[in-house]
Image (cartoon, rainbow, N blue to C red; front, side):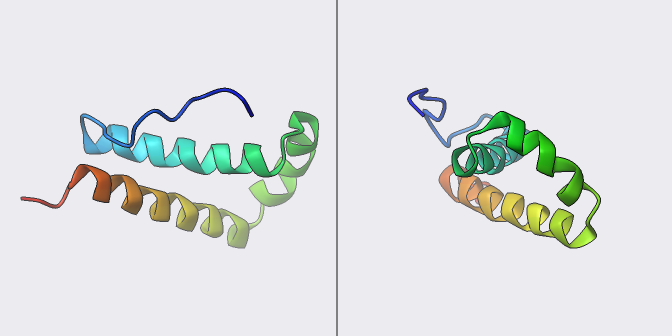
Length: 76
């Protein structure tokens, strides 16, 4: 991918940080499977599987830890 979409991990608020964590997670999938048609075909398979949804939440949480560290969210 040639598009530069991630210019900083710094966000104004924790909410923006969490949204960035979701974007990081989604972009990881896009990089792993760049074919939009294939992603669309497999979405129903993982979208109805509790284990896969929990795994997705874990990836988002890990990315939010990274964003939180970059923003020092726990400083106070």
